[in-house]
Length: 391
Ligand code: GLA
Image (cartoon, rainbow, N blue to C red; front, side, top):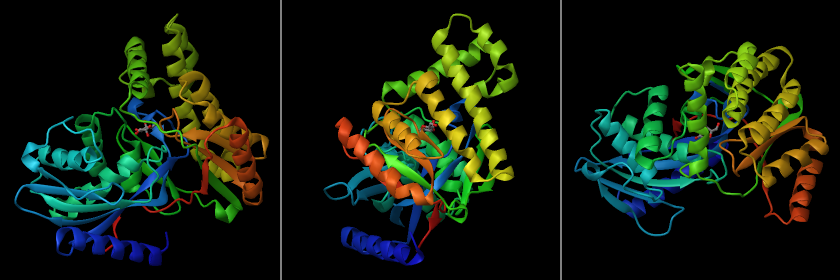
């Protein structure tokens, strides 16, 4: 989104806020969705991830209140504002979209921050249920706005942790820390190399256009939800693996020690597969970082594709639509392709030469039509800015 488009979005959101609440907001904030380049399901294993922010954002206009009332409105949901009292907020009391922003208010208050209410109007260009972190964008934009309005002085990483707590405890989805950190901390033109154990970060330049390359996102339109059982089952399986191996987290199993670790797991076939994915995936993240620094982005294609095979065969979280997107992209000349995000639907990413984009897009659309799948949404992803105040 260019500066002009951002200013126009901010103006619209201010106008709607004024119509809804009868006064001007005190500011407008934006937080992006993300794609993950590599490092899937490693975050709740204390491992490495490498997301970058999308140009798609959730935008929030807010005004603070001091009377304990929280009013929430989304342009994407019919009806007027939902009114809550901050003192009544309780984990897992809400199964609607409002659980995400309300959960952030709850998490801030529970951490001792004096958030006494707000009027909130939200609008979003992040596709929801597409594995592109629309939930994290929603959490982070509200957290950042409240941080500014109440002068809380919380820095990006800590804000991400509070948002994760909102999602884990208040919403009840057992997700890791990647998405919130990506939304809060990514920078324009970079992928974020993040160690999820201590949130140490390095911004890795990722300028595909300069190399004549493009990264496509293929949203399969297969909806997923992390509060359902499968994500939690993978997480529990990884924790079981760590316990059986006597480590704090699977991050602590070295790549060089993988065969020995697998041998120790004996006939725990499922746990062995999960462990193999996590340990090899951490190695892939490190390999991608070193290839980007030594050889440039063209070289990372095969590593992305390896990552997909591991998610499909070992972690078992792909689906026919994701596999079709990846296989079609690869047989039509892509440099690499993989599913991205939590899995069971959502999106794939495709690394391609700029000149191959039209034929690749056509091939993927045709393959989906032939298979009788819903038409996918294919778009280019440019590494963009993290959460910020825009007005
Ligand atoms: C979802 C979760 C993240 C992460 C990914 C998989 O996006 O929110 O924490 O676990 O799945 O890498």
